[in-house]
Length: 339
Ligand SMILES: NC(=O)c1ccc[n+]([C@@H]2O[C@H](COP(=O)([O-])OP(=O)(O)OC[C@H]3O[C@@H](n4cnc5c(N)ncnc54)[C@H](OP(=O)(O)O)[C@@H]3O)[C@@H](O)[C@H]2O)c1
Image 1 (cartoon, rainbow, N blue to C red):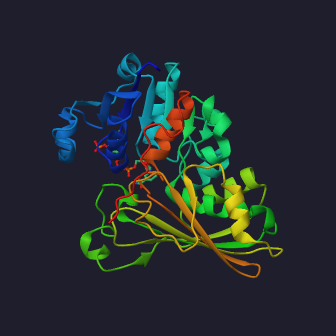
Image 2: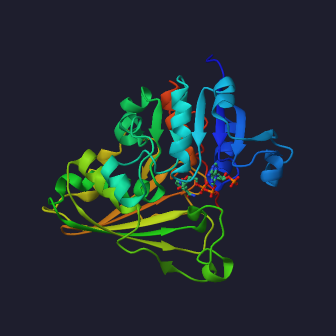
């Protein structure tokens, strides 16, 4: 039997932090040895009363040297910018494996600086592996720093990837995406308040959302295609879940369903459906469900993930499993919150 591996969660008071706690409490090999948020001086059960009687521990103000003393793996569930500042400190201490849930290590330098802010850890950026095991499994096994993908790029890219060889260079791809409110994190804003969201639906940042360059970059790096990605996200009145609809015309007519099935035949966490997918079947799981319909060369590709899990925290634990030589599916949730 493998020895236990100590892990730290930084940003444990947030939504993805809570999901990390819930997965890691039940993980057969990882043991939570350190929990932090921005202020410390509290406990897990005070931050998350839902865990009362299940798991408790002191929550500290994050400190890199203290983490190095008690943990081997660190999950950073922090906003971008804060994350790279802390990851840089941790990496300087050597020997830690880090999974960063923010955008800080996902993009090439120029793209990151164009869409986010000046990068503060240019030294480590080139060593980060993009945490999508479907495409970088071998690299993840050797990685010390993993950039966990964004939720929209996960659902969008997994839907699009099988068809990249059949799309013309420079073609326009339309991605209509819908996310539950937890995708925005726990901080309240006018746009995410109950009165704005309840019984309502709205598009935001059409063609300008920061996840667009992530999808464009990965289509180029992984699929070798420069595409015009027209990405429009929407907020929908649910707590969690993400549904993506991709509309694209191919250069030639193919049997789209067979291509999709063949592409993911060895992927445990990608399921192919004969009917349009829904968000409930992936809620609470690490699955990405995909469906495709075609009208000749025109495709409608439909994917669903739980933004907090396959789009963030369970994907992060899958990546940590790979980094630590564990089975990819070790401790990963598969049973959906249905009904
Ligand atoms: N929500 C999603 O569906 C989702 C999906 C994929 C990726 N992500 C990414 O995952 C990261 C966390 O997202 P989230 O939704 O969990 O955010 P969140 O609910 O807003 O939580 C953010 C966490 O970061 C801590 N924090 C904030 N500013 C900090 C600072 N300057 N220094 C140290 N800690 C700080 C907060 O601690 P306090 O409570 O003490 O302020 C809190 O624990 C973000 O980068 C986000 O983009 C989120």
